[in-house]
Length: 179
Image 1 (cartoon, rainbow, N blue to C red):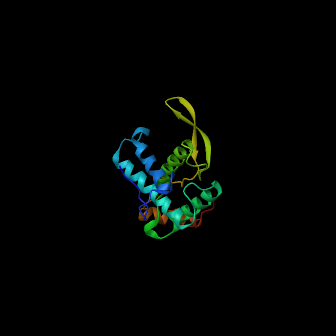
Image 2 (image 1 turned 45 degrees about the vertical axis):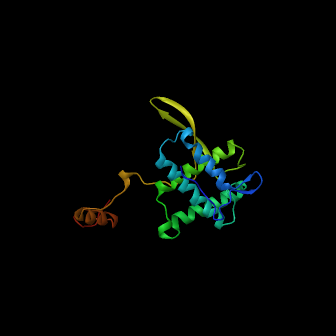
Image 3 (image 1 turned 120 degrees about the vertical axis):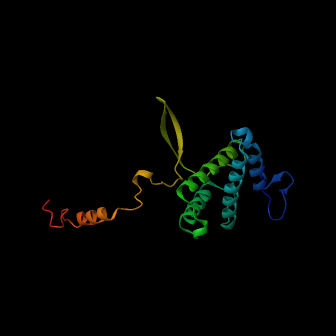
């Protein structure tokens, strides 16, 4: 089971005042009983929350801060992970995975009385599966990824010429297209 430890190796800021890392550690310990039985997932969850906590600390925001401050930090985090240093950028799918993990953490923290707010906004959607519909919450802090069928990796040379001629308003034979 992964365990987060602060740089100064302290677990409390005072008697019965656990640090945010200890709150995260409790959540991590409860993952196997919360529907996450795979040890490889525990590590991924810990790494995602650790990266978020480090980013928040660098920007002076607490892990269990006000909704406004957390939302502002989430916006900065999105910018950092989308357009920051190349080695720190996330693909849209990785971003979505990290937001899902953070959403699980904040939902747990709020249910346990450890947090009063989360940085996410949700909308309600209708999910259909095998003819049965139900209402689900959809986290709006996701980046859209292109579908494989709309991603063109290359064009054949003859099609490239035809495509460019069409954009110029030319017919397939290169003459002016009257339409």
